[in-house]
Length: 414
Image (cartoon, rainbow, N blue to C red; front, side, top):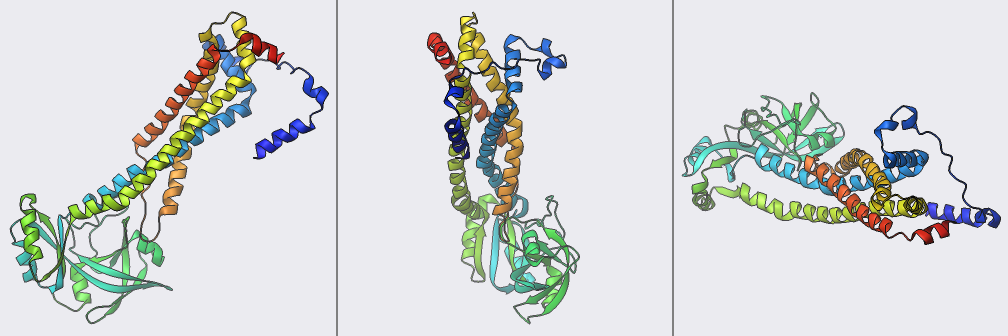
């Protein structure tokens, strides 16, 4: 809008006599590439391309910026796929490596764990103890379940930001990154834990580390330390199971029929549910983003090429009259488009990475955090789309050059 207003204002204030004067010829002088001795690297068409870009640097910069923004839009519109795939792999294979999770109606004893571990189809069982609690730090508090795990959990793993497994502290507390931000604490800070079950003990614990989670919040303790805090024996709330796939269906049926079992969660069912809800919605949104981004990319590149053709029609027609072939004339215009496209792609990738990081930051909160993951395929996709847009636009422009009415163009300019 501002550009349109400025153009209209310039046209309205231009004196008629000035408007009727022929355009002054450009001030031709040696370009930078020629002054530094690179002239021999370019042929006649190449020197024309370099001269035109150097003599109109603002137009070249704006065209490059427009194309680079198209690349950035493509990256922002499509990077979410890689982030979702990483999120699924992290949640269901890096951390939650169990096949089934069994929750008991009432806290069980080691005998209960032994009975579950002996069921046909169970390869290994890993106990956990879960209690509701209120965590306080400074003036902040959160209702949060505290999960007690073995010292070196193998199935229900806890990892740090680098995805390295984290052992349960013998006396301290591990917090998820989202919960740590909500309480404004870090490693070494003290947190008051008010248990809301059993004898409702209250204790102050040291945060020994921050665990990486992308969905939900969590607080972890060593299961022995949690049993000691609760002033109870070796009590468990359930178990994570590694299961033989051939016996999984029979085991699931057996557990569902067991009165002491409150629920049985299948990782495969949870994964399917995730794909049908969050992942499906995000991928649908990504599809719309990509479609619009592709349209924008083609529009930007095509308009740049058409504007260049309109501005240089007289020059190109003159070259044809002087004996240049259609291919030689087209190479001048298409060479400029190629240079701008090559410059725009890396700039757009940098801009797209920054915008994608901004999007993940804005989407992340206390209960969900989107990973900043841009796969090489995303960069390749954005680059290929821009190159295809440039090729299609180049074909259209080449057709326009081939069909230039030389007499009419030169007459109009004159």
